Image (cartoon, rainbow, N blue to C red; front, side, top):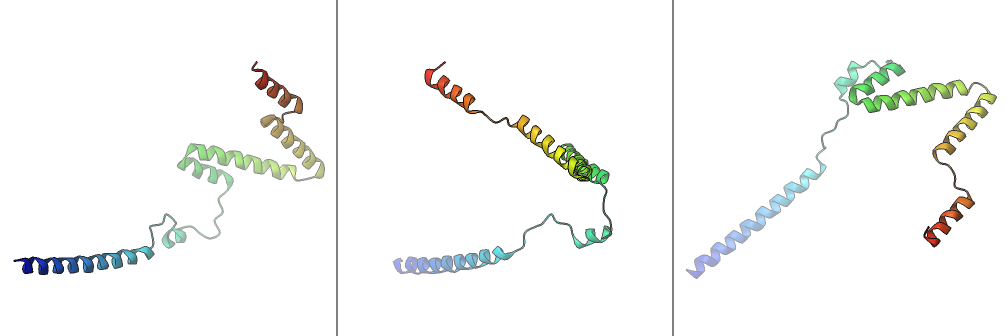
Length: 128
């Protein structure tokens, strides 16, 4: 009886080892399987002519189809591009643009002066 149990145990363990080896081999072969992609296919690329260049309005409309927030960002980006094209026409305009951008940056992120920092430190120390 014990002999039968020992042989069954040996057979079962060998089957288990062979099964695990097969499982590890198969799982290793799936490492190199290409995952699904959301890129366009060759058929979709054939539908769009190579000389097609959408204008800014079409880009904005397409962006609005996906998400209205993205469309608004695209509009702002397009307006900034058009403004930059206008500003790049002569040197005086470029300098004015730089000053305007610098002023807008300072309004968004005002630099703290040494006096303001000192006041904050004194207020923290004194607890007022």
